[in-house]
Image (cartoon, rainbow, N blue to C red; front, side, top):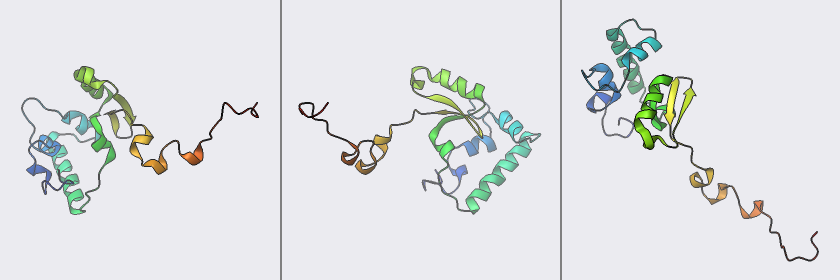
Length: 142
């Protein structure tokens, strides 16, 4: 929501991951803070919250509003067990979505779209100058 210009700081958006890490809910948590803490080799929750806050503040000070593909294009990111669990919980809504190993962990992603739906006619898979017309009625063809 910061990159979209809705808020200036992620703490201003109630449903952000920032708020879940900084002010953990007593129930219905989405983020497995213990796994994140272990992933970054930080011994306690308070230390992890402080590090996380520092990382976010550093990004905000650098005014980096560029989209991070892994985070923006994934449904869930975490351990393989976590992403498998989310995929199972989605049931039929998970059809076409796959669990993919990434450098940062495992991600549950949408299916890739075909190229020709993403690009204009100049970059589509078949262009007139890339095709050949075959006349099946031509008596000269073998």
